[in-house]
Image 1 (cartoon, rainbow, N blue to C red):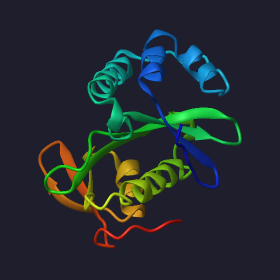
Image 2: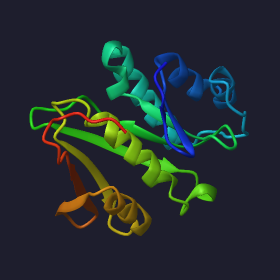
Image 3: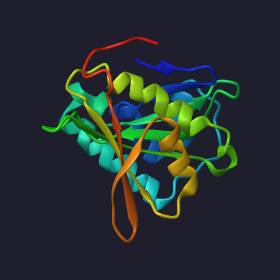
Image 4: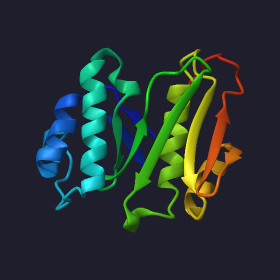
Length: 177
């Protein structure tokens, strides 16, 4: 299984079996991944998100890295502290849509920025990926900071949401960390 690492984090892309396990028994999924088992119980919204990702991965398993939730693991604790997801391969405009969330007790420590920075590097290794797109609720100031920290700019907004865009400034050239 591929994983991306930074100084403090590992990003683990969940395969179909992990997504299914997460919905059935989050602790079993953590154990299967060799991580510290928490008492986490997924709420209905997160179960729904896991099931959507499971359906997408099941429909196109060869591209699962572009369709799944990636667990954000804090190395120091060997524990999942959040998720970052990619919602599909680069589209016809070279856009890749992402979303992320960090458990409340781990927020405001730079973990979301670190995770998104690592995934950004991986995404932009694909020459078809020109932009990373994310949306945030207008009042989610912490998420605005994360996106600004990784080079995103606002490009659209409505009454509820702001859309952000990160451009591959290397113009399709790949680079390694």
